[in-house]
Length: 201
Image (cartoon, rainbow, N blue to C red):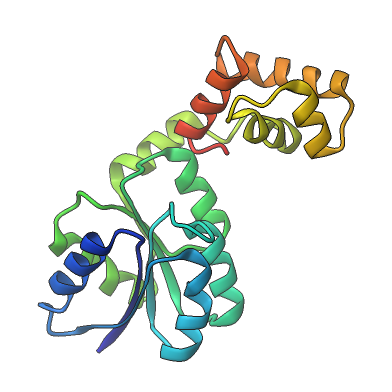
């Protein structure tokens, strides 16, 4: 049996995933959590073979959970399962060692096949997303530009961002200007939205 942990913050979606996967003869759901920061403890307790991780969860996102899981239980393979089919997320998932990246609107038979393939040591990636990721390429933002855009996403002022990141206001303005240019946006809030949509933040 393939032992699976499901990490998904929406109770109904989590329950549906469990019910669908348990229709498969060779898959057993051994744990469910609704928060990203609960994944490692649940994995340590239940020893799953595969962890299905939503990207956006309270506590920690699926990418952070996958990174922690690789340390806590290296034998468990992470599969990112998300509604956010953003190429940048795929790239970041691969960087943290995820073995799969599938979108939630895929048929359940495809999810079950993906789980079996990952269990067999393969890497499974949604085809359309893989093509989009290759087309877009890596993020054009530097690490500092990304930090500044994250801080700007909620409409924070330059002074607020400078205070949060321990930078001068002039430096923040320079990073924002560069990031706005790279994203093709008109404002810093729009730049943060564009970067988030592409999975660069």
